[in-house]
Length: 367
Ligand code: GN1
Ligand code: MG
Image (cartoon, rainbow, N blue to C red):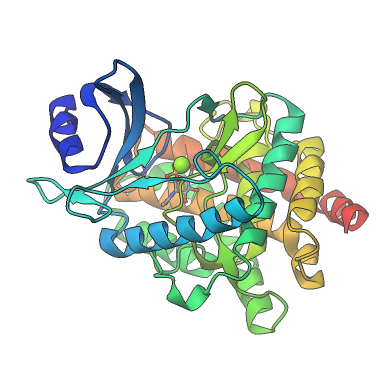
């Protein structure tokens, strides 16, 4: 979509000032995001984050925005009570001129407008180890803040989002269909997944046996979904709230490990550079347990390492399935991008499996 469209759509929101310019923003794989610059009458500037919600992924943007507004309101109240800054520590959604929380353009696309948190940035890779520890405290605390959120009022924005057996089934369906004719290239990866069919059921089994409670979780706890303060370096705000749904705490923990406790980016092609980083893992364990303030059960603590392997395995399967389907879900920026991502994740899975005993010992140390 073009910048001209951005200029048009912004008029539908209660934004301050006149449109100055816009540019693509962030590194998300799903929605289209722009940073929009506006100028007030007095000459001062104000920036917003404008997002086009991916309707292929989020089938019901209305319900998604209902979750979004309700959850941010809930968090905002807690932040206010704790004396925090509600304009910087939680996402603020700008209403439309007709009082809604999303605008629809002439092509039926859904857009939302958010306050841009000034002097903030996000990271695709850990730059300082303390930063990863602090992100763990922030995500642990995020979950803690939502512990009394009425889960039954949340819409499931993507059904079976972190249901790993279902992701396995979807991968096998993609193998069966071989829609893009790429199956012969990925036999080793498909075998890798097949060998972990039983493993894929571990968390679902634990849940049905009553050892793993459902909680309100974020479900996309990548490091780059936290904003850090440019000046102090401290984490400010958890973003990307599209997938807040009932889920397992160990998956929120696990997705952060998948993305952050590695020596390379998620799409690094040279697998010799992709290794599990046990010391970053340890920092995250410490921070997450602290952030959750004693709120994790014994069963959850015990299954944190499995959550890390599960999320990495699941994400690898999702990338692989998308490669087989012809790249219809995750945005790709080069030939074979999803396959590179899948191989990267599976390399990490193997590496974590080899370190499982150490991963468990580290959790014990901080429990
Ligand atoms: C997507 O939107 P983004 O880039 O933060 C995806 C996550 C994956 C992640 C992999 C709704 O997150 O589930 O773990 O890519 N989000 C959705 O980087 O599918
Ligand atoms: Mg994101």
